[in-house]
Length: 264
Image (tube, rainbow, N blue to C red; front, side, top):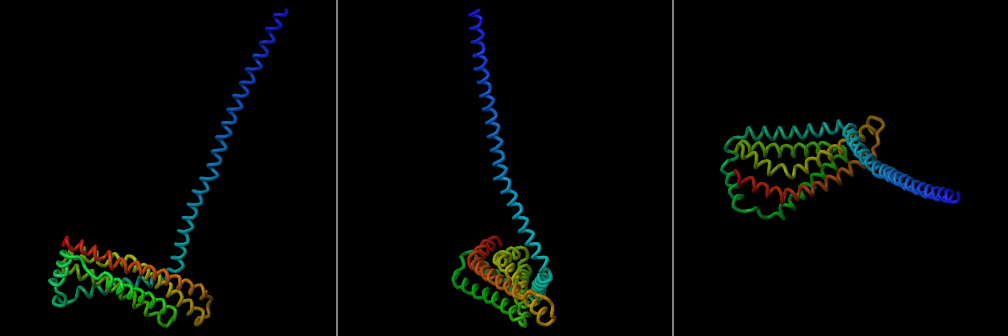
């Protein structure tokens, strides 16, 4: 009997040890699962909002851009119409010029010089381009600020479009396909920066002038101060863009022109 009771006691102690081990294992597994769940929740709370924030920020930006373009659509339409009119007039004028006014041999001789040597005087070209581009931006802003000088904004846009259309059309007429490559290399790089700046500045100048006319002459509600602040901001951005365009015109456009001339 004594031995039987000892065996039972040992069995109970063994069961107790086994049960405690099982409970400890279950506790460890539960803790592991809870830690994994906590980590997943931490990822959800840290990474997911970042993605949502980025998406929301992109949508807000796109929505603001859309709202800006939509609210200023008439001004943008006028600017684009004037610019395209200048491009068309320049292209037509180049196509109707007499053959003797511009000689293809003169253009060919200039390109032949570019094939053998790089253009010099980039510093003077930069200063000249800076002066012209900044003067154009300042004239456009000042013309819009005075309201009565608004036609000068249209004149600046028209002449920029005219020069682009004339140059491209003349090169294509005199040199056919190779002339198009030369024209693109000489006209496109800096105008990719300058033209958007002029478009935005022209839109802001027109919007400010129209807000003044609405409030002073028509007696309608218009936020003149906000329109003026936007025109100043557009002028600053346009001035910075014009500086960049001048550097491109002085240093990058000649290099592209040399490269294009060697394939003509």
